Image 1: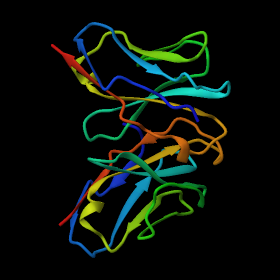
Image 2: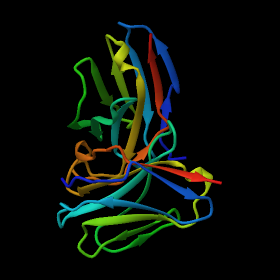
Image 3: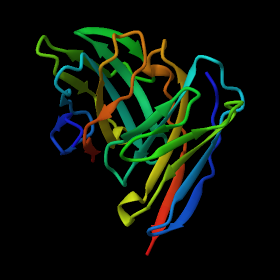
Image 4: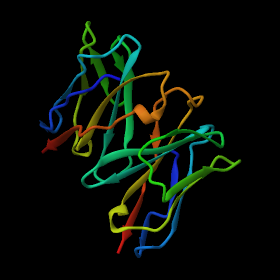
Length: 112
Length: 115
């Protein structure tokens, strides 16, 4: 399964867009990009996932580059409650959860 | 609210003891997963059950065991507890058929403290 690289931390001003990058240069054609976040000591929360097309839901947008080697999670109007650790995971659908390794993620701090 | 419930929220016990953590998945989800999160290890996958059967095993110690019951709730049993077992234990559920990955929905966790 593809390995992902994320910056350890990022800051964002409240009300501005937060753009969280993820590098997955070894991604395979059948692997999806999943994003989760974990607010301090709470259970991780599923945000969004995609294969190759850009995706949007009520929480965020996911932009995947054409070569699929990287992606960006966009929180359009960050609030203080979006302060969390954001995890990018890449794996195929035909696998079990044992492969879903949550790495160190990116700690996003939204500042007033 | 993810729809996944876990009890208890907090558990304090002594070394050598045995505890049981309980999880109820979202309505309709047949797969249940257990994770351990300690300060120095990050989120570690322990085990997955699908419709009562074990589907995948991760870094689960032999002192730990789990099961999923006919009503789909699951229990994680931790025995001969050691100080290093102190951690947050999360349960997650998903609609996966068992051999595939679908987005997971996590419960609020049980914080276990071993003294």
